[in-house]
Length: 548
Image 1: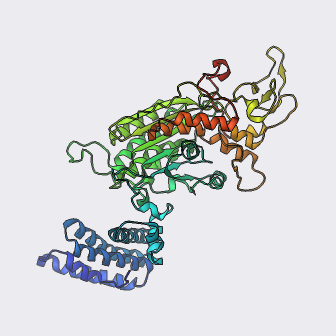
Image 2: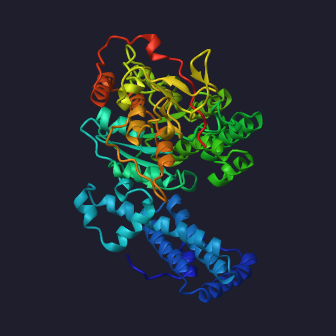
C-alpha cells in the first residue's frame, strides 16, 4: 500500500462545493492556513501519517465509486487530518490514539474489501498475504483470528457449512465439550475468559480460548460479523440463594435492568414509528458509557448479566451480521425482572422466539446442578427438538463416580459432630455416597469419607460434573491450585446439558442418543430408556453454595 499523502487542502478542494460565498472566503482561507500550520508542525507523527494514508485511500475510493456516501467518508477522513494535527500539537494523546485507530480501521476495511474482490477467500490466498496487509488485517480482527473477517463457506443451497460460535465466560469448556465431543457438531468455536487457569485448561483440551476481559472487548468487532451463535455463562455467585445474593437486591435489579434498556437504544433498537426501519437512530452512547451505572453495584459480578444483551445487540448492530441465536446459562435464582428485561430487548430487536428452562444436570446423567437456561432465536420457525430427554438419563451415584464401595457417607463441610437422632453431621454437609452427587462447589477438593477421611481427586471432581477422567485441569500461579481447579469444575456447564441445549438450537434430533452414549462411556453404567428410580434421582437437589 502506497505512502504518498495528498495535502489536506488539496483533497478538501475536490470535495467542497464549487461555490463559496465571499462572506466565508476570508474565514475559510484563515482556517486553511491554520490547518496547514498544524499539519506542518505535526508532520511525521505516526498518527498523522495514518490519518493521511486513510484519507488518500478514501479519496481515491470516492473518485472511483462516486456517490453521496463515499464522498462523505472521504470528506470526514480529510477533516480528520487537521483534527489529528491539532491533537498532536496540543498534547491530547488519548484523542490522537483514537483518531489513529479510526483511520487504521478504515484502511483495514478497504484492504479487506479489495482482498475479497479478487476472488474466493482460501487458506492458500490468506497464507500468501504480504506482511503489511497481514499485519493490518490481524490488527483489525484481534483478538479473533484473521479468517473470521471473511464469510464462511456455504453449500449450493446457501447454508453455512461450518457455523461460528462465540462462548463468553467460557471457563474450562463444558459448553464446548457438549458441542464438540458429544454432539460432534461441525462448528467453529472460540471462547473468551478472564481466568488464566480456566483458559489454560481449555487450551490444553484442544479448545480455542482467548484470555481476556469480556467487558474490555468490542462486540462490534468486524471479525464477529459472521458469527451465528453466541453463548454466555456469566458468574452466578451474585444470584445464588446460598450466597450473599447481592444481585437480587431491589437496587441491583433496577440498575441492571436500566442498563439492559439503555443497551437497546445504544445499539439502535429503540422503537420509533417515524423511522423507515422502525427504530430510532442509535443513542450515540459507547458501550463503556452504557455499562457505567454498573459501577454502583455492590457485587460487580452481578453487572456481568448486562453482557447478555450488550454483546448480541452490539454484534447485530454491525451491518451484515448473521447472528441468529443467543444462549445463556445462569443461576436458577436469577430475578425474573432481569430475565424479562433481557427477553424484552431481544424481542424488540427481532428475536422471534425466546424460551427458558430450569434444568438439573442429574436428569442428563451427571451430578445435581440446577441452572436457568435461556435462548433466543431470530428465525421465523421455532426450534423443533425438545431439550428434555424422553426419560431421565440414569445418573451414577457418587460412589460409582469416585470408585468407592456402597454404604459410605461423604462430608462436604469437613468433620462435624454427628447428631445421634439423624445419624448425620450437625450443620449439614453429610450425604450418602449411594445417591447422585450434590452440586460440586469450589470446596469439593476437601470432600471426604465420613469415617476414613479419604478425599476425592480433581479427576473425580471433573467426572462428577461430566468431564472425562483425563481432562487436563490446569492451574496458573503458585502452588498446586487445588481450589482453583475445583472452582473451574464448579463453574462449568455440564457437557451433557450443553449437548441438550445445543441439540435444540442446531436441530440435532439425536442429541439424547449421543448423551446416553457419552454417559455410558464416561461412567460405565446402563443408560437405556428405562427411567431411574425417582428416589435415587433426588430431582430436587440443592442449589450450589456460592463460590468464595
